[in-house]
Length: 194
Image (cartoon, rainbow, N blue to C red; front, side, top):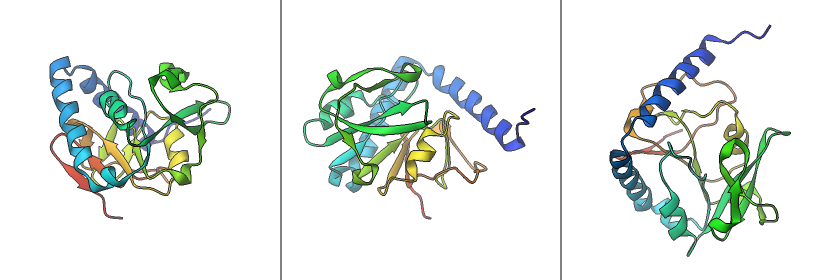
């Protein structure tokens, strides 16, 4: 029988606790925080200079980046991940508009078939989802490891977007956990030193 490690159970508890906090944000408060986080992201030189940007299309509890994606489609190449359950992996696809997306795995918006596939090495900047982050660049995602596997192939800066309450002092990382380079909240921008 499979035994959960202490670290696995700690991560599960953190996922549950922080997810609950995100869920109970009022629409007004969430909208205000989302705008501040996106504003902080757009201040960064690395954002301004990036041409090909990997973004995840948010679900309702994540930071709302729809406006950011919509505006960026005009002058940047927007790349969105597609889930492949069979291989537990993500492929990357360029979208030209929201019409290039449909509801895919886990109820998330993903690229429709026949959108242009992009090599991860071509990406200039990646926004990486997560539920919990620390200031050392560790993150706790949704527990499937899709982004950890993808991150190994990305040669660009990786950015996590988070509400302040999603940032804790220390996450005990597993060997397979991939770090981010920059963490942005409504209050701070943390540049992570390796």
